[in-house]
Image 1 (spheres, rainbow, N blue to C red):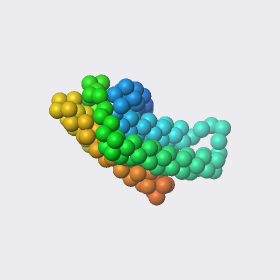
Image 2: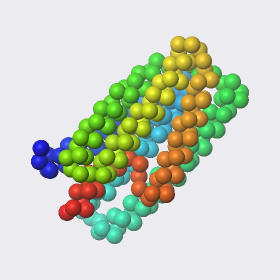
Image 3: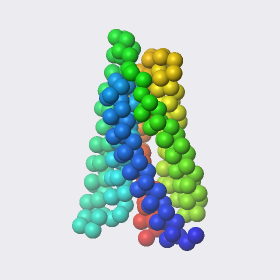
Length: 215
């Protein structure tokens, strides 16, 4: 496969990742609100912010025609800071709600929709990981490999969510939901810290960065 074809494939995978995360976030927030599940809400918030950060990176590396390179760089740095602190704000909310539900024994309702969302993510994320890893090898793209690993991390988060929702749905173990919420809150803290420390967004557009550097 030619470099141009690989570039188009990488960009298509990036758009697919952002679009799916956006849909997943909306559905997770809806299902979480209906069931009173902080784990689902936290999962949806994480998906939404990752979709936002991925969209910013796609915009950044497509070289907006009306901005100079210096203007793009300044806007990217501002976007990184905003996304990084957003992770911290969402983490505080998810951790607070998880602890409150445990302390006051606020049991969430079982959510079949949430289980379906977690299963879909558990299937799609490893697939995206494999496709991006193969494409990154052909392009020699370190950023696309990093993005692939992010999809793999999302798969593990989906597995944790599925376990929590499944225990509540099958065994009535409602405590599993806020416990998974605490785990998701910790992941949000880690992502926020990594974003601010490394000065790059968690879900990058992958090869777009490398291709622009090569040009």
